[in-house]
Length: 565
Image (cartoon, rainbow, N blue to C red):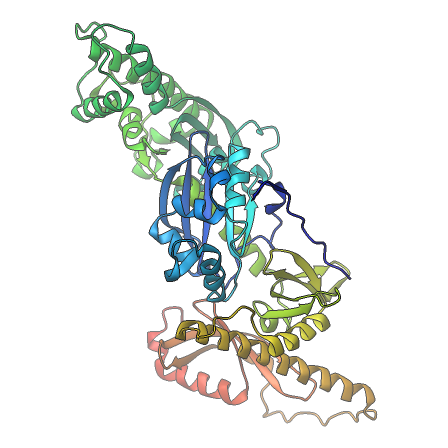
């Protein structure tokens, strides 16, 4: 069984962008690994790029750091290495995650490789949301020398039931999911960036539709270009216009359609061109979702919320509120509503979808081998004469409909290739990894790297030991004489499965007291019983009988501290 090898095309001295790096999503394989503390999302808009560092599963995939940069200049890749270009687009937080503390001039490849060894799951997950395909491919190319897996999100990842609403951009559907995580459905979100978009969904989460027009900044830039040819307005560049517009909104100065000041007249026309059309959008949305009728009641919670997001959301919030910031006369025929700002709704939409998909995966039945091998490092000979030893990580199990007890496990190699392993192949891969360890280790690794390497080897060795025990037990059972039926258990001996649902407690030296619940029982071939424990922070562990007795007794003493008890 040979793994397909990805070929990289080159032109001159530099590799060219290629689509193969940009992977389509496939769930649950595309989820961040449970061992990942961070991952990165990248939004490629028509005028800029937004980079976001997210936390891992423990942080609910929430955005932690965000920054905006210009689009990637393809000419830079003709002059510099991809990783050198990537560094120019990263803040200190982004550089630390990808390259660590050892980043220096010209050592980007070495730093990225060494930093990956400090991660329990070496490949860094990157999610690209793009309205500009060339930019998406350039982003993926910048990460081509980082141990990573770069996925391109699609509309179906956010709204698989969207159907004929395919004309909406991926930023619109992602922002709508972000707003769902904030207020639920129905929802109307207005994204104020280079373009001004609006998207709505009904109470059932079905997309009503949306629209797009030139955004605040785009309108200002267009007017600024025109005023350069007009006497008395030649000093009004786009930045000055935007600044004066913001001040006018903050001052709540009523717009005068018959004003004598040319500059104010220009700004008034810009603002009215946003307020009046979008006021009608809000009115239509309230009617379609029947939210207007609910808002007429006395319950404040029934007042619908319109959410604005994007780079100029603070200005849009004031323009779209029912009083329109005092700039124009309110439309008293529109039912009550309120406007709230949500910065970076797109990033929160991605986090929300990943949580949904991770939750769906956790609800699937877990088999005995899963918790033992998932996340462990494995190795395999390449199969080519004098070929290298490949290293990878066990990611997720795949169960066929007709055989739910013997899964195959997807191995994600460090070069981003994947392969399916049976449990026997996983066992062999774990044993080989215990022999060869990681590759390209510095001659004098620091303490953090030493600890991580030791932990990975110990975890692999533990898994091998447990699998060896199960395999040897199975062989003895196959060759043993027919078993005599065991005597019936005494009525006084408690059924081990009767503990399922029992609350337990355990004291960890460094982290203190933790509570959990017994979720299952497994009796191996040697007659040893193990109880499965799910702690309240979602960590898992197995107890033998002695562990169980201690945990039950400790819970009796400390049950008053259990918030779920």
